Amino acid sequence: MKKFITTTKIKKKGLAVIMLAVLSAGILQGCGSNAASASAKGKIDQDGVVKVKFASGTNNWPFCYVDEEGNPAGFEFDLIKEVDNLLENYEFDITSTEWEDLVTSVKLGKLDIASWTIKKTPEREKEFLFADEWVTTQKFYLTVGANNEEIHSTDDLQGATVDGSHPDEYIYVLWDKYIKEHPEQNINLIASGNPLNDAGIEALQNGSTDAVFMDDVTVAGQNEKRGKVLKILGEPVSEEHGFYIYSEGNEELKEAVDEAIIELKENGTYDELYDKWFSFITDELIK
Image (cartoon, rainbow, N blue to C red; front, side, top):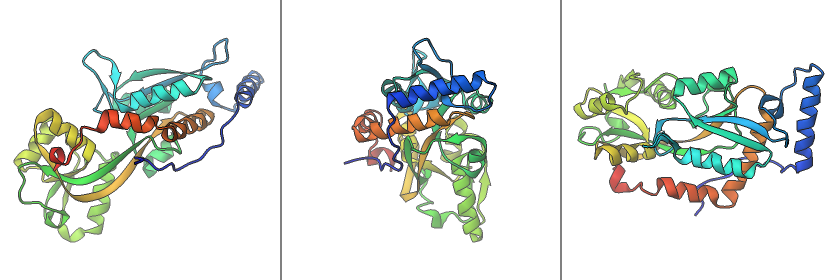
């Protein structure tokens, strides 16, 4: 069974069209034009291959992390390598970096493309060029400490303290929306910065934080690493996709990568990578 739904179709370009765009961008740049394209943004080698700088995260296993040997690893790194294999006219320089460095580097144009299960929010869409085709998908659940026997659903959140991580995070947006829709529950929303570090897990265990919204992959990963410390409750409250973000002027690169992601979904490669990284998730591990 397919694990994805293709959301966007882009007409495939021939090599001649791509090379014409590369040459045109170079001519325009030489004439002093401010027009930007993927070709103009990246360095082009003598064979006409555009050099692209890509980065993903360091500590979000199994999506993106740094392995014991210090190398970038995870689903998102494997996926971009497959994109690189498909796009003969681009060559990706793949690195890992911390979140703040990642978003700052995209804003400044030091990175052409970045990924870290990045959700679209109104604020982020004002700052970044987002892909049309999604690359990750996550189901979010009400999540509590594994020893919590008082909360069984959102109906039990009266007076609860919940952690939204950071105002820029998707889970904060989820909580903010829920709280506005349920003012009678008097929920206290905090932003600890990271509800899944040691302090955040301890807070869920000792009850100083009552609940979070978290995706099943992250919960499974935490329980795999720490033992059974979290459990999800009920049905998903939301299912959201993550997208690549691009620095300004990389519209042509975005279109090429969107096309490659669609091809990887259609030819089965996406499913193979999904199974490689996420087959460890079981109901026993997360409930």
